[in-house]
Image (cartoon, rainbow, N blue to C red; front, side):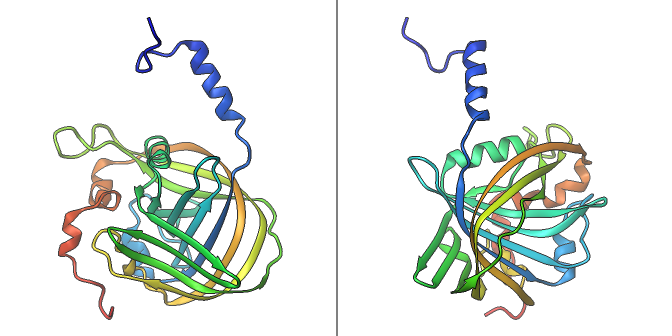
Length: 265
């Protein structure tokens, strides 16, 4: 009988797959990172317990092109500064990806809020443009010009917080109590440049990052980096505490009933 690819894999095949994935080469990405201060009450409003705000209401937007063999990947993230106990980190609200393959591992293993979208990183001489778009709306755009090199930082570890859960099969609640995941990324940078420019947030009913206004732009950088990550379960989370925030994960049609933030154009 010919090999049936939907059939069970042998122990040897499973072990070979694990060995290959453990020996992946460094994967480098080129990306724009923008960091700004927003309103403290906004950051507090989007953090599910037990996460809490840190001392500064920071937002970090990352827009990257990842050099994968055979097909480049666009990857983005908009996250707010958060803490779990004494551990500082970041809580991503949306993570657009350009390929389905990049979604499944992050969502199913770590609980990352990944969604299919359009990710653009362009450079023409000193001019840089980076954007995240979904449903035909570029809800975040970073525009500027490279204004000089920056010293390379030492390798650093950064923590992202995710909630991993499965919605209940009856349409309410969860199948089991969600878990809070600490995803630790060790980051190495081989090129870093300063960008002078601005961040534009556009109204989107599905990706309402316009609710995180830029009150003070701290920095924009363009760089090349590689990361290695590992995840651990920090603990169980009460379903009742997380349920009010579950709409963050999905394209909730009720977002369309929300008006744009006050003062937006």
